[in-house]
Length: 105
Image 1 (cartoon, rainbow, N blue to C red):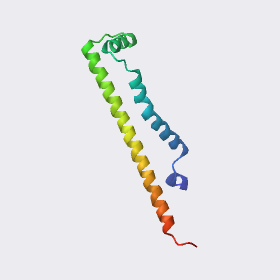
Image 2: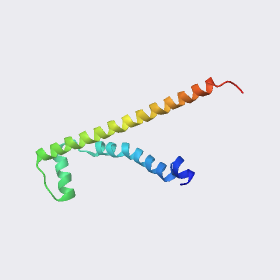
Image 3: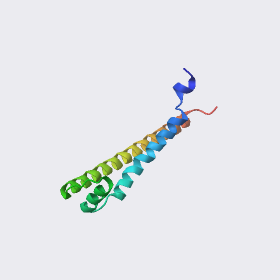
Image 4: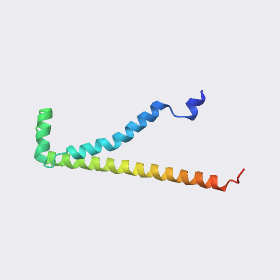
């Protein structure tokens, strides 16, 4: 096994991780922005898009479910970003403490 394969992530992996990170914020945000306010509009969108009609109660439940999923996804993304920032700050603090405790050469 090469040193690159076991010690450093590949550049493709970094790009994929970055794209997933952006998608984690973009997809639920777009869902929240594009979800219609009234259930009748959602029923009309489903009818136009699929050719199937759905009752108003089902459209209301579907809208509530979509909003709950989008908000939960945004909350999870925010939690991950906070945890990453917290660990980065802790690592930076540990490095600065380690370098401050070394005696000068």
